[in-house]
Image 1: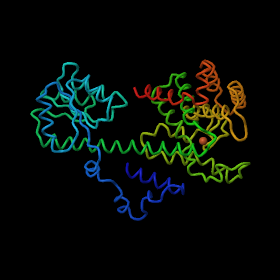
Image 2: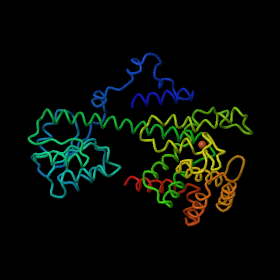
Image 3: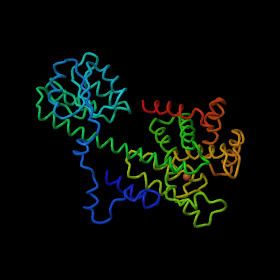
Image 4: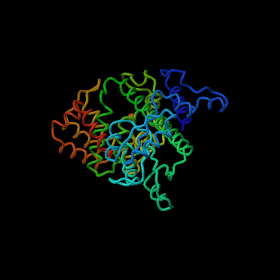
Length: 390
Ligand SMILES: [Fe+2]
């Protein structure tokens, strides 16, 4: 995956002269590029913040024993006497590894593990279950709950240290991938902010499209994809020269072709990130038209991915209700009337446009105004983020 990140950065730098050239992987034999790959042991050792391990065990003696085993490794160890206390710790701070005993009064180790893995905020934290119960059945129950490791007591010091080190190494890798995703989001926002007319465009798109998805009863992963798509759909514009992107007046045929390429470039930029796979159809197909006259693939009707159609409706509504150099901001009623007209002309999914008009109508005026002017956008997006991460 680091290869993917290096490739991603080199793609971005090649297509955008503004990015620092130091980020480009050196060209030449593969062996040379591989020297850029981080050494995960040294990443762990050099980390300014020691990895945090949460110990969940009712028996103080057990906690002391594990602490003593890991003492020399420089980890920060946080203790919880029971699962409810552990959930509070997980809600309050970053934890890199959980070690939980199988036998607890409030809930068993596997039940605790299942709850950790069910929550999007904690599901990537590795969990080790320690157990004094022998037997295949217990091991199966532990792994079925999503545990990453099960160690049977009496604990072998060397084995505990080796497994903890290896689990933390994987966690560091996961964290680095999340950071790579964060870099992409930051880049996408910088692309949007270059266009001074669009303001809180990404935030509004996320809000509109999730409102529409919720009205359609779409599942949470679709809503998360739309949320991310709101930010990332135009990331490919990073490859368009400013002279074309900000040109006043008509584009030449060649310039138009360059602008239209942002859908394909955006997909290429995000493709190396596996977690963004559900967002790729949105990025590629958000300029397709219902009658097949859109780009880049001239898809028609329901052949256009649904999430791309949803984001497109949100995108058009936003373009109509905000002011641009060539037009004032239209009222909600005017915008909806124009969208229904476009749907009749065959450009948009008529059912989706009608539903969006209905959703917007049902949304009370102050909230709709907040949608448009972004006054409470941060607040509502934060609420959505919380809702989606449950
Ligand atoms: Fe676009």
